[in-house]
Length: 133
Image (cartoon, rainbow, N blue to C red; front, side, top):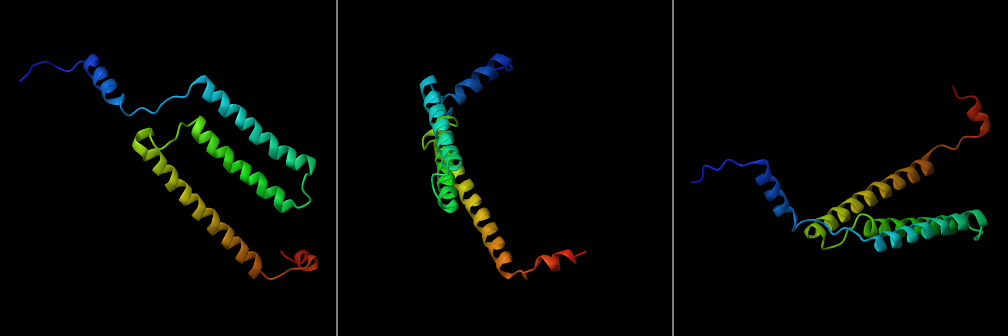
């Protein structure tokens, strides 16, 4: 049995010794620049699509803008947040999948409710709107 009292240095060494195996890899300057350039491109293309009116259909333009947004989210997660299947023993990827599942459920449920509210609401003419309190 040792009578050695733990010191600040012991705690510091124990902390660093424990954390070396669990740290996520930090990106290099090259990976940050690749992520930055991809982010700029993935921002500029949707901006151009909207400002130049490339497509006549607003639905096609909106779908493409959202698609580029999803791609940009993936680029940010890979190049800036360093998320992959190896970091933190795969737990960051599992947390991401769970978060995406919750977001999909919340957004699709909200869209479903708004669609049905819009469909089932009583139509009102402008004259009826003027007489509302």
